[in-house]
Length: 181
Image (cartoon, rainbow, N blue to C red):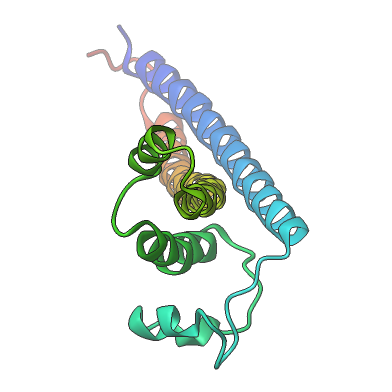
């Protein structure tokens, strides 16, 4: 095989790989943008706010060292995670006395006349449901961040491949057509 043929083949493979990396990077940027906008719009519709200074749940933010969020609207996946775990999670744990919804529900079914327990079950159910929904927003926000980092890596690798292809083209133009390997 002639060296010039091998160089041409490697340049084409490098060019195709560069294009694939650029297309993948663009797709990942679009995925990040879509995920971020969906998480934000879904959270905006819910109008969830961190407690204000002096509010009933403000102490939960103080304990978690997150007072910088006081009074702000929950708009990102990471903020949804903080609200879910450090506000709702703390409150439902206090309401349930450390028991899960399933444990409370079973106890309530065993004692159907206990209205206090039935109210406790309902509060824990609502809290766990909202917490789960907010943690879903966090999960999708996190996937969007992974897509962004993947896009950056794809673009960096595409740039490196482009540099290698350009070096390969330079070598292809300089090599003697009669050299064999």
